[in-house]
Image 1: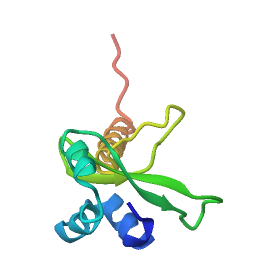
Image 2: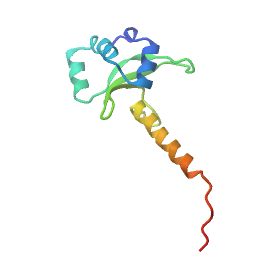
Image 3: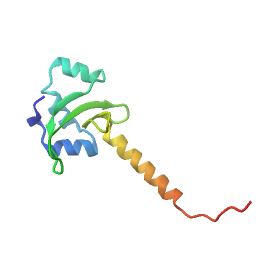
Image 4: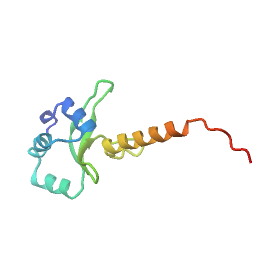
Length: 112
């Protein structure tokens, strides 16, 4: 896949909001039959190398299928360089923040 087919803004939008049909068509139109077949069967496909503003170098971004959010774009994360759905990560952070906010409420001590 040629990295020029998507702008950095398209990639950022897809990471934060998910992929719309137009962006998905733009990505898959440049893929070979084998790449589309591999994607359909759950294999991530490299869509290009992108450099975001705060980064020193470029990272490879991949298109892959999330069981909850359909097709998403992200780069390998963490020590083990795993591909994780960015929408699931955001959902997990939101749930954790809500839990921590609820747990931080000071309650009266229980005297036994």
